[in-house]
Length: 136
Image 1 (tube, helix red, strand yellow):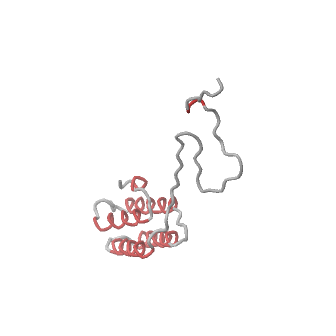
Image 2: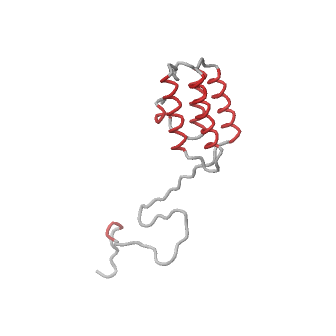
Image 3: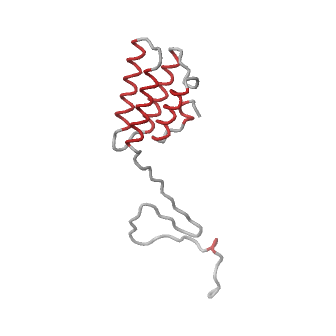
């Protein structure tokens, strides 16, 4: 069998010998490597979207306790969004919790166009899937 070349599927282990330094590595016939990089959100756009959210919430007729609870949630979202690497899961939980609290006091997020759009905009800028918020 010397001199005969085996088909690629029968060539055996095609490994790397030595040291490799890379973010991603693909080895072997047909191998592919990819890397997903999440960039930091546009701070100015996020700030503007959060201001819209605050404005939409201010227009609601909430009792003082509900208003304060919602304000604390928005402040926490702002704090998390301004972190060097925002925790998208935490922001999703906070936005979902905010929508849930509003629902408990009789506000349906989908009905209030300004409110719903503001929440969607914040979620989109911070790469939070709307499906996690029950809005997508």
